[in-house]
Length: 239
Image 1 (cartoon, rainbow, N blue to C red):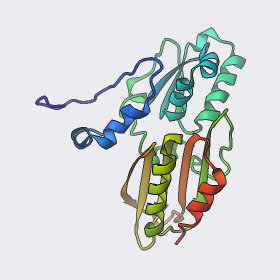
Image 2 (cartoon, rainbow, N blue to C red):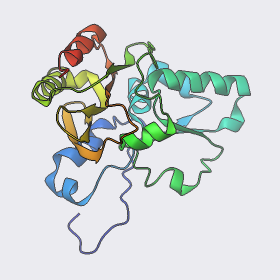
Image 3 (cartoon, one colour):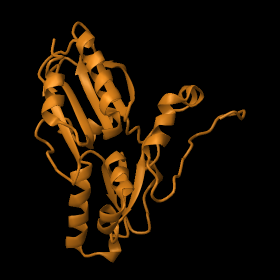
């Protein structure tokens, strides 16, 4: 990061079974990195033939799938269509929101991997409008599950901010990812937040459009999360 001139992109490749979270956290934590770069997307390559076995014997594999913004399901030529569908269904229980590509020899246009701006929730909602919908995903995949909540209307930032900060501090190790778009009371702009374990990042983005309902939505992906407690806490922040 110290060298003169600018990089177009920095690709950080971790070993096959590394936990992606600490790498992602660097973008939020490290002042130098945070000022000069933004985290574009976490990309995971999954082996269509062996993923199911890896998920059984390597907990990191589950983390990687749950954590990814883009999943490249590779070696699709080595499995039957039924096996492929089964693997994809397994991936979806762990991560309903990631963009998934089926490939052979990882052949994929670079634009599908780089500059995804996948941490931008607007982009996710364009791809999958019901990503933040209540009832969209109630899967149990061993211990990792995702949950989404919706308040039809505004939340009070003076209630929401302390709540989300405490939740991520206390349950951070178990929260792989959290994301949300909120309508703050008396605020024309949408507040967009996302988190990785204990690290939270959020800011006001574009204005709510006239044709949009002011709805506050949040998604949590993690393990051993108490759905009812989180739901109750979130609803208590309503304005």
